[in-house]
Image 1 (tube, rainbow, N blue to C red):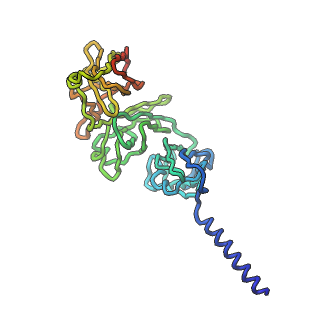
Image 2: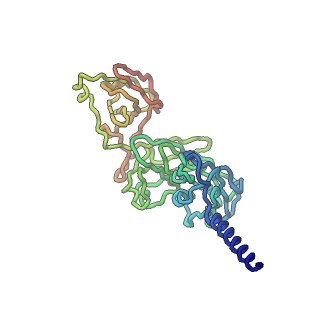
Image 3: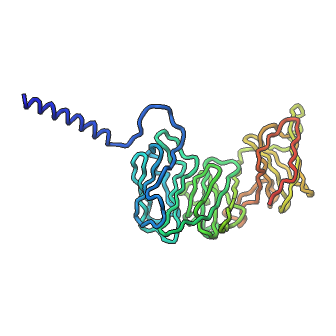
Length: 353
């Protein structure tokens, strides 16, 4: 009788131990309930103050929900890059980062979580989470922010410290890479000169000149103290055919909208104005007196861009590796324009610099 009781007790203990082992084998979010579409939020770091750190130190990032472990592989990065890769440990709502052992004490680094980072419901970040760290007692506060215009799919912004020639961009790894939607920030930079390009569908395994690159209108960006540096990039979509006024005038049975206006500021002629949405594009040249007029516009919501057409080809050229030219300067009207058929919209004194 006593032996039978012990056998039953051992079986029960083995069953409970098995349940315990299974429950502890992996860290998973509780199942059931409504599907959460809100991206995870960083709640705290340990240590809380991320200065005066040590090489090889561990930093715990704590989030408000369970993180999808598979999303970590391509979403955690350290900038500027170093030879030794950043390592991490997954603990459900927590991620433990181990810093490389070859960091520079005079630099501010950022741990970046990009838009591949997601929770268990696959809700991805809409904006990168950027965490500044330093082995010294200071954090740099230089800032470059900007926006991407035109037609693109999955843009990235690449940044090099210093004034880098185009041929060297092909050979040198960028110091920072941001996987963007259409807006981006480079935070915690030192006050210095930087070279910045935009790349759509960036493939780091290909030479940069084999990627789809858009250059900035200036060769380098100078980041200064107490100054927010703003830059823009543009991608051309060659699949959208231009609509010419002469073709539209033949469609006499359709009603159209019109746009007129004037420009002020420092610009060099010729200047082309481009009115564009997802399906239509209309262009006109700025007159010598600074006025413009676009007729026969199909009604809808549009974005208005003015650009300095250096080579007079009516295309916003964004620079090429085989040319010294940078991107042509362009200016984006701040508001979306709603154009209604049989109406004329006027933009007075649009100031560009």
